[in-house]
Image (cartoon, rainbow, N blue to C red; front, side):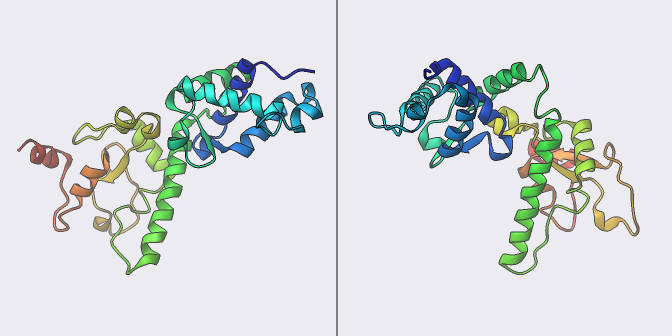
Amino acid sequence: MAIPNEESIKEVILKELYQHRDKGYSLTAQETYRNTYEYFEETLTDDEIYKRYQNSISKWANAVQWARKHLIDEGLLLPKNKSGRNKWTLSEKGIKIGRKLYLEMMDGEDIYPNELEITIKNDLNKLEEEIDIEYREGNVKQILSSKYERDLALRKKVIEIHGTTCQVCNFNFYTKYGELGKDFIEVHHLIPISNFKEEHRVNPKTEMAVLCANCHRMMHRNHNKIFTVNELKQLIKS
């Protein structure tokens, strides 16, 4: 038996990390070693896996370490100072390559067929955590996000209709932050929820807008008057 060539190891690392978008396309070193090993376990001997080799745990560990180093050199993995302690994380370039390799392996069937819905679910989960923290840390405060704004189906429809570019200042999170900002935008009620005296079915096209975080805050800054999109646009121009 022989250690797989480095290109094969690198491809497996990229495919494996791509499958963990829920963790930020990132795994710990131990998880990466284990998951990568599973692709090649039938071709590796116990000595190659476990017997100490030079300064590494084994020949297998040494080969994976070199593959990681070269992936970092090629800009496909984030360097140690950016990936976090004991983390192996894909860069933006690495995500694209990892996705390509994964699709080839799965005959074109992506693990994330509905990326927008996955992104929104993750964002909403984080929003719920932030709101919970805000309530627990001090007195009850006014929260800009309403139950409607946190609704997955409504939020998804608003973004599908209006896109992810702020309707006031044209800021786009993906353009600015790359993969980190993909499909991210805040949604805003043009008609305040407090105006509804009874249950109301929100029209995502005419009653909602998409805003960057800055413009969303400014919309609500004056509690006596919620600005319209055009009013805030004029304020920026003036």
